[in-house]
Length: 314
Image (cartoon, rainbow, N blue to C red; front, side, top):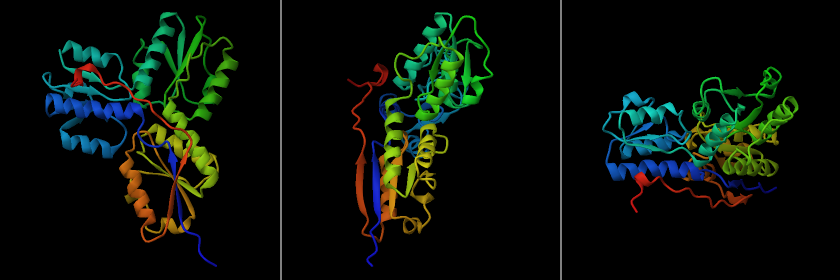
């Protein structure tokens, strides 16, 4: 009996989203305009390959603002920063560029509006994630409470002034829906976002992985271990019927005989993983085989965000 050829199925959409693309362009344009070095507070996006490429161009990544000289430009990462960070940069008369994803900025604005109306704000998210730290830092201490799991909801107090919720943009759509449902039961009059906080790219990539799981034996997710949206993609794939799905950072993470274990391998990439990493995995898997490679399209994305004026050359 003739052996079936390996089938490699690429999820679409996958990889870079508009916010990540914009953040990377901001660093590139800043280096071009101001010359190296250009400092970046935290990883601009959660992908080591992207960071190393930008370092080679002249970007210097630091943890905190005190590591940046007053006379050098500094960029804030796509995940957003607490209000105290640009305030410190302004007090030092620094040139700074905020590369926060506009969809994260939208969450910041919503949180501020709720606070101005006197509501206590609940943030659905993961403790310690840079986006959560940035969002929590938009309001005075104690004005926002983090909710990580459905189980947390029962232990929340009653706030006489009323409550509203916002969410991290890179969460599992299904997990978040469960937490929101619990919050609505606990607080029937809770104020919801006017528009879904989980971003279009996170939602589309999770939908694509769910469909991919139906037609694949295993799914490989390209992404960093500290990338929230990439880790969520693995979880979604496993829950959707591909329990052996795994997160890899590059083709180097693949065992040499991985392709022999499966007939249909699905591949996707987190929102901060570049396409060349995907292609390198495809090349390694298909090496020495007559693999059939196709794309499974769930949605087409045409979102683009403008660059800040300070780095534009027009």
